[in-house]
Image (cartoon, rainbow, N blue to C red):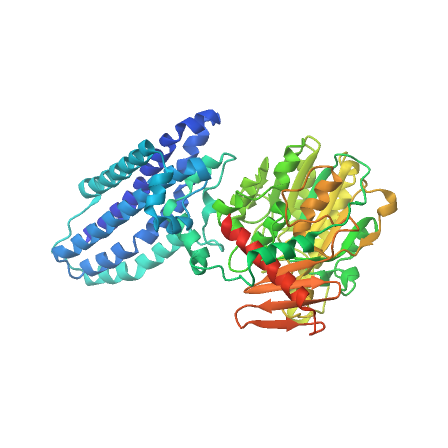
Length: 618
């Protein structure tokens, strides 16, 4: 019966080694790029370290069928079952080798991994042939055949075990059948951590080619197909011809003139971006919330600039990151951060700041693997990225990670070591369940959201401590602080999740770099987080045209509107009314005048159609 376990282990090991063999082929094929970019040898070798967990997860997926065959063979082992296993394994070797060869062909042009788009191109093989250089095409065919044959021969000669008339052991068979699926499941999800593994696990370098090499092809292609399956044959959010949508979008963004209010007294201030996990506007008294939940925020507001009509375009953290750093609105169905082939085509607020002399860093007390945020953050080019594993082990932490007071305190001290000007972002954690913050819970109300408002009270308290310590630092008087939520959350008011109230969030500018006459003011401009890029860059006299969906909130002539996506539709807000539309039942949720003009309905639909088309085309 030991043969069953050995056969299983050898086949699993084969996949890990084969993934690395073809990965090496990809690296050697693009060795010239690696040399041109002057990438250190040790960083290239790290590819094989950072690829392991995703390779193991993929191998566990591949081993599902062999497990079933071996389970049968532990009881009944005719020779033909071995043939099925060999045919299955050979087929996967061929398909995987084909994906690597295809990726070698597309990387030079697209700089991405193989994605769902290949399905469209495979329907026209003649176009693939005609668009490639003849020599390159046949060389890649040769590499595909070489990798396939090498893999199949290595498997059959070195890893395959013939299992015929295996000695039966009932108890072993029962244990193998029961225990192995649990181990495979753990491998597939990457361990016992709360968030299942994704491509972020293999992202580690500022060099795109190394991240591309490290991410397992099969895993990436599966995610790409899964995220876009329903959109292969048609765009589900086409409401009008695109020329009409483009015309409407042009009208939506039309700005008569630029009379930007210049609020800064420093040309190149440091920028500290505090991204608050799940903060609803209902936590802020001057945004309509009950008093006493966030008293420290209220103190900051008196010396800052509060934007009181800001809405999150999405409802998940990864969507918020793309909105804040890439100026790209959230949309239904998927998130652009999950798909590296798409997010690499977004502009980057951080990269633009770095081109203008800024040093950058990012801090988060939890795991950035969620929603592939880590991969997206690395793409943005932060000089330093810290997540839960990078902080000192002595720092107190809860179930999700390090509590806000400790990450904020760490950042205060760390920023004193930074060369100015710097841009840094810290993503808070404690206003996410399971609400295990090390702090009393003084708010005795809130009903179903009692834990949430007390978590917000805690994070607010941490912000107060952070600013008290920051004020003693030499960099404080040269720093603009921006406080914004990644998305909203259900509050004690239990708004309908399709409503505008549910999606409203805080946005505050604070710091000594703000001119005194603007401190304590409130801006009533309707907007979203993705407006932050244009608003900030304009203040710094840095071009922001790349951020096509981002508008300048400090220009009084900027049009007033806000957008948010739902699971299958759009929310659209204008000063004279708003609606939410759900495509599934083809139903409008009206919270204002049900006789809203047809032009407003068309605006919201045109916006969603354009954003989703842009997402699909990237």
